[in-house]
Image: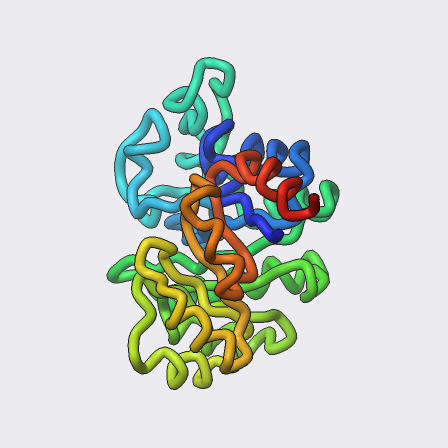
Length: 244
């Protein structure tokens, strides 16, 4: 059973922080999922929301703040006192930690209007090339087909996964455009028929964000390859049951 830690182990530590990624390593997770966008001074940083308001003691759009300004924010206190002074992570810091902790990384390329898709992808590419990241250790994912086309052109050896909330009728056409490795969808809207359809066409099938293992027990029989979860630790007993 394959489980990916969504934004790190975001049930035990503030999401998308080095603390959450360390938790994933401690739990023995193989994969973490992260969200990447650009600071005002064009540094790829790891944060989900367009604004910092929900997950920090600051406010404002990520794209309007320099890295120094973002680093001045407390990204942990909102979650718990024990994470006070946790700082925003850059993509570079995250990939270095992942290499040290033997974690594979699903890099979700986060696009908000009016973000410059080309520039974001270019900066992500540069970090990966500069760090000489092994392509087998990362996966690009996005709801944005154009972003994945750019990554296919620049780093074709890195696998690509296309995100959907609900799998559309033209999914195969979109997947073919980026020579996709995987399709990622919201588990709430997946059916057994649709899952088998995806698998019949040779794609890996990942589901987000399934936090109650019992709700998706049947999905493994449908051929789902990976569950992306905020609580990967909850799947341990299910894994033991399947092995028994």
